[in-house]
Length: 76
Length: 368
Image (tube, rainbow over all chains, first blue to last red; front, side, top):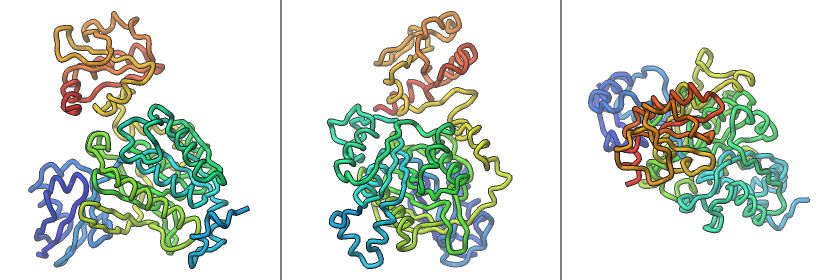
């Protein structure tokens, strides 16, 4: 298990409260944990970046990786 | 002829010079939306000497715009944003050409309007228009400078530009499908700090200048996010997704058949769901009738002119509806959707039928 730092933006930041740390092996595992902890996340459109690269598929995580959760914004 | 004195301080810059200034003078940039983001974009591109600027917006200046839409003054309230902006920008720099298009960008006019320009800047405030612009720019292969804001945070990226590997991405690579209505609140509902669009719009203008002149490294295939509360800033790499097989338009004729309100779930069966903030602004528009479909003895009543026709009597009372825009309201939004369906069925396509989501309950909560 690796210790992962999670940062979030927009409404996701309001849901997660603050930046947090979790243990996870890969991005899917991390997302499952987050969905369980924060059920409001489940139906939201969000993108995940690992160390500042946006990912589309399950990605292995290592210690001190930073995972960012980003929602779309519409305001202008 | 270039006015060398006007642009002296940037011409002097190392790596800029007359050559870059001439590129700006011959550039054609289209700014969609003359609101919070559009104002600083227009202001800086005008001042920098972009030779040809198009402004697309159909909205009018209102008092609640002024804390962030810094091109407008209190005297401009009620004027078309395009016209107020034109006046202000022409005074700032009479040496450039400014074209005003006082329409809402749509699948009907987008291709024609976009075709006249080299770069498109997305300063809009809603998802349907953002997806519309992304699809149109992808199909026309126009660089798109995207910017969006939420409360204290902003995002900027450049789409449809080629990076040094020759690859280019689109907004749909970042968010392939729109969020559900109400999932992401807009500035009307969630609020926004006035300086934020100033910062994000100024970055968009910077990106446009970089794309035109070739200086620096534009945010091609990269998304910058900025939070003004703690200055947490990050740049994310956007890899291309496989967009083939996704249900999105890939030709002009497919694009022109799209319904972006429907695509974003805002319209269902031809009925538009509107939020309390949208209700507050569109209920005041001319040729608009509001129909309260609750029973006569239900309270509180709306504080603006409306027709009271209980749902059970709606069909027999259609003759009372004189306007083409109809907004149906009730207590919680359940009867109004039924009422809107009845109206759509009988009145048909000629009428624009909307219903207030969450009803008067939601409106009162939002206006508190």
